[in-house]
Image (cartoon, rainbow, N blue to C red; front, side):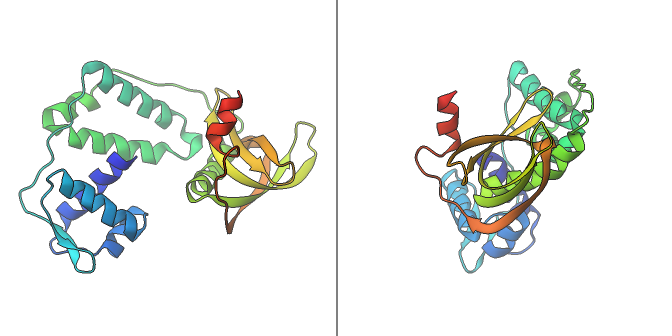
Length: 225
């Protein structure tokens, strides 16, 4: 994800005709100004000719182009097949993001490489599932809550249609063939719990943050499996 963010930052700077502040860049890329400062420093360490400093704005020297990405045939096909699989499952709220990634990867591969990438004879087909609309509805909110480490209030229906209210710390999402599964730390149960996205009756992302603790993280849950 950081690599894609660095590409996006360079794209913003390349399109700018005058210095752009970290605050403006942060707003465009959906990150904090502190992240912009770190990313600019990372790019400068990789010899990207970015001029300016925090408080004044940043600008990319004219004529600077990224070297094209180099993939071997298997790597290229793996990337494209994964993206097309996500795009095929349109009900999960990631279709547009996958299309944007595909365009950015193709652009970063240069003219010839990008044309070969777009023309790869790989197709992903998947059937629409009954819960796909709900997965798309809740999935976007939950992915944001996971990134921001926000406590979520959840109304959930079990397999017998009994509804319960939970306060949870959302930790990770798992895609099975039929359903999306949310893994969370449940405050009431003081333990990990899994929730099917298509069984969620309602949810609210609160303004409260949780701090990951040893034994309560997604990797701790996975270690138990």
